[in-house]
Image (cartoon, rainbow, N blue to C red):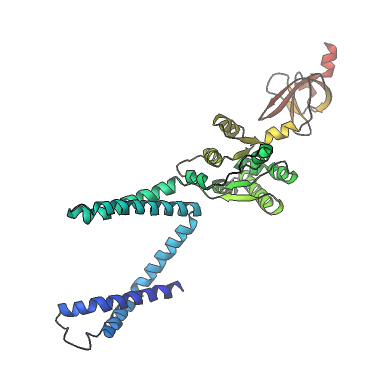
Amino acid sequence: MLKRIVQACFLIIGITLGIFLIPELLILIRLEDIPLINNPYVSAILGAIIFYLITFWAVDHVVNFIKWTEESIVKVPITDIIFGSLGLIFGLVVAFLIGYALNTIEFPIFNTVAPIVLTLLFGYLGFQIGFKKRDELLTLFTSKKKKVNEDEVEIEANKLKILDTSVIIDGRVADICQTGFLEGTIVIPRFVLEELQHIADSSDVLKRNRGRRGLDILNRIQKELSMKVEIYEGNFEEIQEVDSKLVKLAKISNGVVVTNDFNLNKVCELQKVAVLNINDLANAVKPVVLPGEEMKVQVIKDGKEQNQGIAYLDDGTMIVVEEGRNYIGKHIDVVVTSVLQTSAGRMIFAKPKLLEKAL
């Protein structure tokens, strides 16, 4: 179909150029007196025949170029095209206004060369500004909810929730969304999807399984949950790190980064970006353990320090048992001495109850 359209365009161009150029060509070669050749219909037919013959050589090149252009445009996010086009139009309008003012100056260079230069210059600058500043411009067109006294909590809850790669692979975010504890619109940036796909295509078996698990979690979020899910097509090409892109997106969209990455959590806090850490939520709902409480645990391995043993609760909380190395593989009663709580997790320090009694 595309090939036929290109051939039709060549025929139309041939007919048009034949009507206007062949008579001039006949004058140059002094054949204008021949009535049959100098007929406009004949000129149109000759032009059509000439360009039809040209299509046998040129049509494949033109079709391939059109397909390449089409594929390139399809890969570009729609926001890039829209804001680039708006910038181009604005630049051309500015160039026209300046060129119109220069026409009042009676000097040949201002009337001929200057408009062409201004059109090229301002058209290029307008497109580049619109394309590179699309993310900042997008915030101008983003509708924001007006603050109402009793609805401020609802407005905060409806902020965009931007998922990072680690929290998608972790999988708990899907369960949290299903229970209704996470509200608003879930945003999955395109660059996070690309990183996830790269992990899923890794030659390392562990990484590949983690990446595929993340893709399964996204599929579940989109199909099984009632929350609104959006894909952000922008890509901050001037920024290399995915974490930095997430922080940038959260800033311009006034959104919240959802992660379980301890380092990303700290970066967000330093840059005054709202962040929800899944580990913080998990730690918050764990049973409270206070110093002096007793519990029964199984010491399974030795710790980093001398004579330490390591045990775990059912929820994965690590317990460091002082003087517990001799009890590896055994169930013992311990007494909690202290609890360390951080965004990276919770750690409980304890010592054997038998040792406490001996003291």
